[in-house]
Image 1 (cartoon, protein in one colour):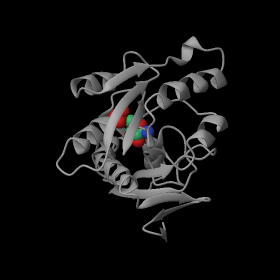
Image 2 (image 1 turned 90 degrees about the vertical axis):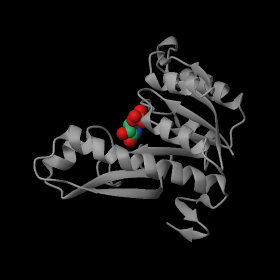
Image 3 (image 1 turned 45 degrees about the vertical axis):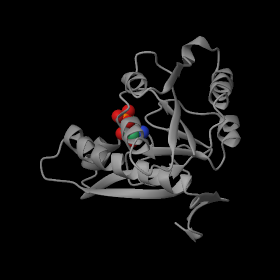
Length: 203
Ligand code: GRF
């Protein structure tokens, strides 16, 4: 299974995917990494692993539509089976989302449907929650709203700060994202209508 990963930043999730793809019996390969920011550290991680990289800078385009079309063109050069958003900090147009329907994944740092959007760790702490976590989901036109595939639950500890909590959530992200991509590559995971199915069971 050929996977293209989109990033904007440090790329620790990308690294987890690269490491899994390099391990024995891996079911997928990362064939390209595309960033909207030229200084994203994830680009260095990709080059170090011998993976093709490119930058499509949103600032070079007049509007979201033309940026997304350029991004699609760049992605489709690689003819991927799957497109993975790993800390990609741009909102995608319906046109883009429809183009990759059923083969576009994202990871969000909360137990969706709780805390869509930004500052999730801070919001979970402020709400006094006793647990938090991360969700891998199929991307649909609703921001952070597509069907969930797998979640990792992280207990909140007394005295937690958003940073400490984020660190523990990230450790779990690096487990569940490669897992979901592996399921997809094995042909076990699919989006049916508005639901995610694993081995034919609705998740
Ligand atoms: C992760 O926390 C992920 O949940 C969110 O963006 C962050 C990306 O981190 N979507 P990294 O670039 O993978 O380190």
